[in-house]
Length: 162
Image (cartoon, rainbow, N blue to C red; front, side, top):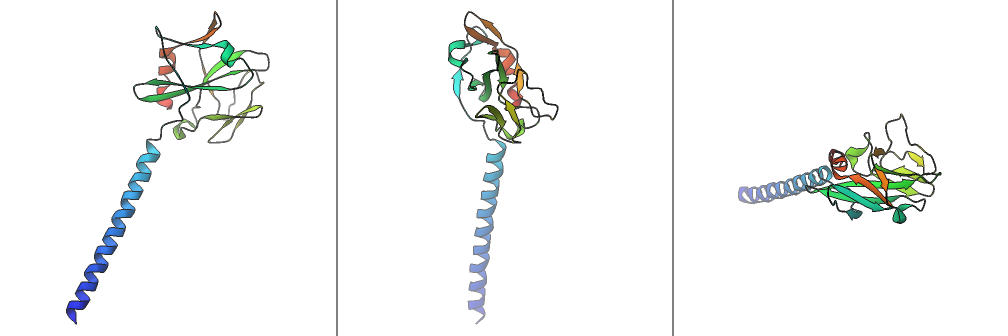
C-alpha cells in the first residue's frame, strides 16, 4: 500500500517539476526576446566617405520614406518626408519618449503616427515640435546636387535610440 502511494507521489512531483521548468523557460524566452527586440529593417543605406546620400527624386513625392542604416549590429532607422511646401526633412524613426519600445512611426493617410503612443503628425505641417514628448527627432542634413546628404557620424550618434 505504501509503495503505491510513494510511486504516485514521485510521478506527481516529477510532473509538477517538469511543468514549472517549462513555464520558467517560456518566461525567460519571453523576457529576453522582449528586451532584445530589434527595430524593423527598411531599405538599407550605405555610407561612402562618411556620408549617406539619398537621391531626392526617390523621396520627393509627398510620402514618408523609411530607411535603415546599420552600424555595429544596430539598425538605426530614419525617415524622409516633404512638408506641404515641398521642403525635405530627415528624422530618426524614434522619439525621446517612446524609443525604448522600438516601434517607430508609420504613415497613415496624411499623417505620421507613433506606433507606441499613437500621437499623430500632419505630413503637410512645416514643423513637428510637440511639447508632449513624442516627436520625431530631426537629423541634420543638406541638399546638394540632387541628393540629401547626412553625415554617418550624425546618424551613429542616435544608435542609443535603437
